Image (tube, rainbow, N blue to C red; front, side, top):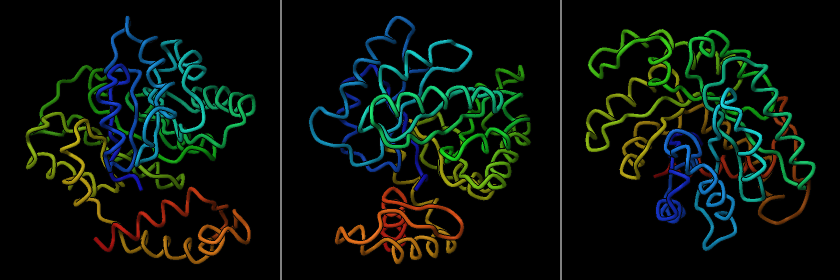
Length: 285
């Protein structure tokens, strides 16, 4: 599920340890905006040690790299990609070519290190990214969601943010989930900055859901529960989950049968089974 994408500063060992116990749908250890330039290497080392240190994370673990234009992505990926990392969030993706180049690096590291397939979430945060969102979403089968980054988008457009007036970013915010859906992937909305404003968060998340987003980016553990309540599984998601469990249940629960099968034209495996069980559990809560 993608109701919540929780960003955790990669240079804070305390926050990373806390994140192990949280129930966000995805925990994303950050190498970009929350990490100063002089702490990038320390953050890479901290994230590299996270999967095998202490208790396991309760949620899938992603890493947000630096942007393609920064030139730091190859070093980021070489430092952190290992078993225990489920996916990568790529910020400020401008076009499908940038996504494809980063995915090429990821694919090479998967083969070199014997890793499973790493999921990819491109983040749309520029005017070029908004224009090219559909092709970015379809750049590779491992792309599972687009993320909207409103503040960098507004900076790129030379506009100010006004929490009471979304006119400036309304088009971009509405276009991204349409492009994502057309490409067969999810869309995750931007953060709500005011961590003590639960009412504003719920209102903003409700708007995002009405636009077709599957969930919201968040920056504080206290935002998990309100966001999850807004993004309860839809009827279509519940029906899909039931089909996945029916198709893979015996293999996953008893270790018998095939570990991957075709369902409605797509291959599904243990990752999809885990997601389906989470959807059904959420629908019953």
